[in-house]
Length: 293
Image (cartoon, rainbow, N blue to C red):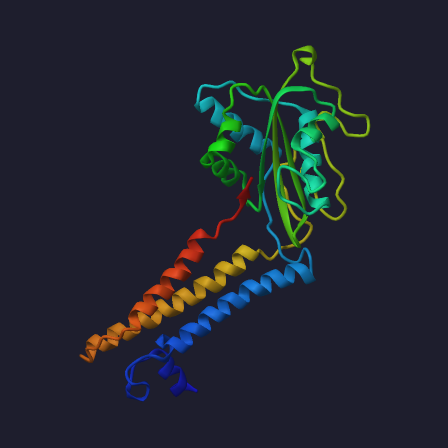
């Protein structure tokens, strides 16, 4: 066994002075392992919905504070928190979970504006930002601010009020947190904040009932899942990172011993090694912790 491991990572006569792990067959095996890992994640999400997921620390209060902080930085007035708009945002998030979609318009044809009117909010202008799979509020706001369309919503001087929904659930087989911002300005004839429907709770704690998962309260400091989650992002990065470290380590050992023993050689497969490393590195770089829409 020791001899076999030595042949895997150390260039020597028995492997023609080329570590076995650097041969095309082993590099192909690494790629297959990585792809199987991705397929396993997808299969798990279908067979065992909810076993994978993202645990977040996002709160409505933080979303409100950071949004207004961005507006103040640009010399704009703060948005006023409106509980009816928050009810609208919460119901939009819950609708995405209930009907398993990730978009501004639902498969049934509901638009964001349908949720505004259903909550009893009459607006002159309105907008919506969506986010999912983020761990903390800073990353949510950061992603929105990097997107021109989402940034325009946050910094739109026409908006006066905001509602925020932060809801946990299962989307496409994976536990996640959806964050919804509803921006609006009330009609001139209804400047007074509309009354909250009787079947909801008091303004400061607007919630959408969710069996099994915790919906964020406006005053609660932390949003947590009902049980520990296995993040698909963490799994993907762990596999990719392991493969990356293995190849880099073996390449380093191979190069060091080749120079030390003065076994100068050039193998066309070196280009393949570099290409493989580049692919793994790019997959790790472009794997992000969340999505916006």
